[in-house]
Image 1 (cartoon, rainbow, N blue to C red):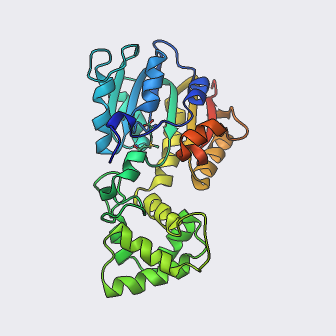
Image 2 (tube, protein in one colour):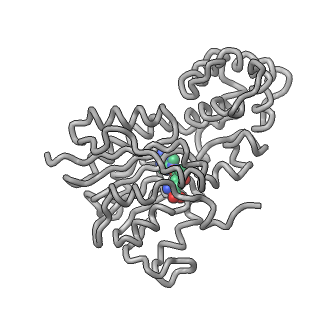
Length: 302
Ligand SMILES: C[S@@+](CC[C@H](N)C(=O)[O-])C[C@H]1O[C@@H](n2cnc3c(N)ncnc32)[C@H](O)[C@@H]1O
């Protein structure tokens, strides 16, 4: 049974996000990964105005509870700020902000990856535990995971599993995928998970053998790392001097890009030298938070 929409995704590290973004009445913030709106809600309750962005058309289902503020069905009564929403990719955040006449903002949040709703809805094809069509696209455009798995050359599949999944058995899995698709196209997450598991050397494991393969396909299908790099650059241009960027990553490829950007960008000063991680209590209450790494940068004065 799925959770009610407003409980479907528990926002991660909310108090840390508030402490670093320092929302204040009247200031504009961009929640560039709106999801179910948990972080937006916390920023609004703290008095800031929020522009929410998400590329997943289904995020719009969670907008109504915030968009009308007090009085809207499900809206928290104490929300003080104004809420706006733009459907789109955060790599385009400057254009999206300008469409609401926002030329600079005081804070930007990137809470990367997939939401619990995306993982829980088997038909979106993100999860190896829920059987569904092999899709993984956050928008309905471009090649799906099934297109890659059934059409790409073996070498290309191996390369992307290695690059985006850091999968040690990438070649072995790619070979097994090509053998399996010659028998019948791989159309479901369940079948792909089985094929990957059959290619894996034996022995007990802490995580599902298909975890890295699914991560790699998702990153590739959605160009997640390209979008992250461009999103960080756009965020640095959109922030006002002294404005802050908070980025929460869930795997090392993302965290490396954020870390490098904060250290190298002439526009940004790293506020956190090491990533901030969630408390033990939070991890116990919300196991999805376990992998979270939060980094903060501040827009330099020049
Ligand atoms: C971890 S969830 C965010 C959850 C949210 N903070 C909350 O409290 O509900 C990540 C969200 O970012 C969205 N997303 C991922 N990459 C994106 C991109 N390049 N542009 C816009 N949205 C993106 C996903 O569709 C997903 O809804």
